[in-house]
Image (cartoon, rainbow, N blue to C red; front, side, top):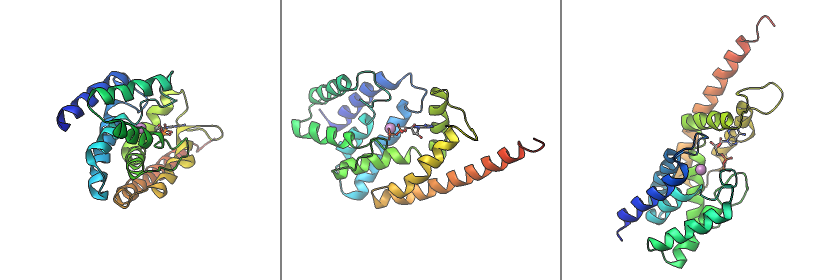
Length: 201
Ligand code: ADP
Ligand code: NI
């Protein structure tokens, strides 16, 4: 099978899982991560095809999103074999995806893992990252803002404002810094409006 055909099959496979998502883990997220992974791979001298495939598949088996993550991973790896990947490639993709998640706090062991992690992190910051944080917060019935408890605005301070310093690749860093500044501006404005809303308390 040609790479182009494999990528079409991968996209169809991923769509089955994430078509209905409204928590910020939708098909467009998978696509953006795949495209960024391919482009970062070109910059970093890694295999663009393997990185793109790993980007598409990176959220399959995520514990937040799957009731039975282990089963999803078995199905994913079987799928990769049916579209012609060798055992070595399946293992490479599987290992790369295994270290993507920020919450698991793992360091990537391969350049492919580092690239896919960067692509996923880029999609968690900037304008898209802002949109996704509130979508995820809504999906968990979390308030937009709270002066005390957990909130989506709180998530920026706990996690999203740190991500630009945690980017692995040089090519990812430039885009991450740009997105970071946009988020900072957004938060300043949010704070300004929030303060105005407090007047007269
Ligand atoms: P990873 O899968 O890399 O561990 P997460 O699943 O934590 O990353 O994040 C995926 C998306 O969900 C990101 O856009 C992130 O900002 C958002 N998200 C995760 N946790 C929260 C939260 N508590 N509040 C708002 N958004 C969140
Ligand atoms: Ni993701």
